[in-house]
Length: 122
Image (cartoon, rainbow, N blue to C red; front, side):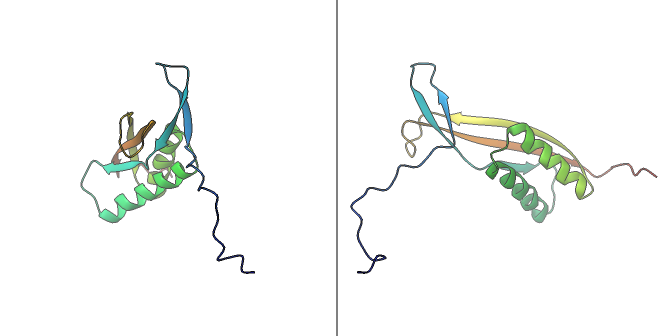
């Protein structure tokens, strides 16, 4: 008997949402779908730098870190490559996306301003 080609009669499990929150209009708990963070460097910069900052934010996001911790990770990464970063964050959400019925969809937008004038201490 071949176990790998066997057809299953079970339905695929429903996707597990990242978070749950209480809906203020009712007493039910609704699911939330979080999209990956969007990183935008304010000053024109090398696309490789923007990709590196996006990768840093994505790694923190995958570890389920809070918005504050993602911002701190971006600042620490900037310092490690010789910049000082000011990070602004805004979480945007919508309840009526047809692709995710009955779920709140959220996305984190991060604006990063880099300053390369870090003082060197002797």
